[in-house]
Image 1 (cartoon, helix red, strand yellow):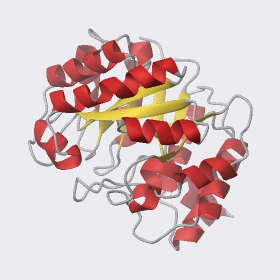
Image 2 (tube, helix red, strand yellow):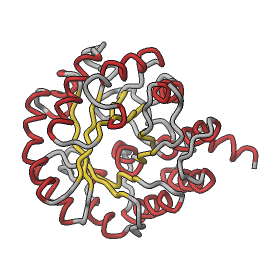
Image 3 (cartoon, rainbow, N blue to C red):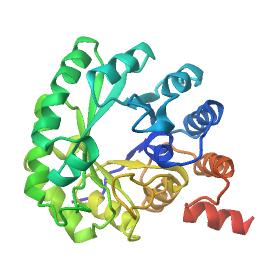
Image 4 (cartoon, one colour):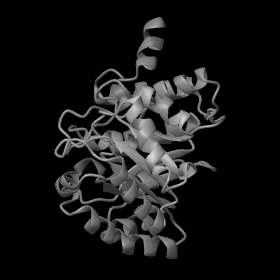
Length: 300
């Protein structure tokens, strides 16, 4: 299969990246990050999530962030909404695309959202119904698609079943997440081969964590399978509070550099993206986890 000519990047840094930070981050800094990312050409940005602040304290100010950002034409500003209450809050904040999340592992589902996979999907039904009534698109996430911190190996067939259910419920796209970053290129190709029998590949996305240093190789393997949408996080921000040892998402800067080298269009200005990552890294008081950003910085 030939490589796609264009890849759409889903920037998850402001939500999936920052949600795991222990230090408080002000609304103004979050707004600046989102505005920096849209100025760099990112056309899809996950801005925040409408969840209980008891569970994810860092996301408590998501409504204020949505109120403060400079909404550019053609950019999707999305939010995670795990339940109907979250969706209603997102609608009040002017959100036009939301995401729901399930797991491919029963143990992870219990640890993460305190219910079985089947129960989690059932909980999404009122969210999907309300989103449809309001003309809001819904994206689905499936976590632990290549391994679980509690169950170990996860079968590609199980992932395919969950993806099929999310699509049947109305998700326009399903993102497959290697939450603990254990996947390798061969496993990734097998995964998309199996899942692709249930869900068209143009409706699938890849979401890779770089715990074992395999994220870019896994993205390339996904490209070979016809996948053309990838989640990434500026400066490699992120982790997972329910998967000890899982490092950040693959850095958006590194993904753009890879894709540029392959002649694949993203619409993203790499220099602007690097600056966005450097700025939020300074706010966090540490160096960017992007290798491309660090290499460019050392050269300058």
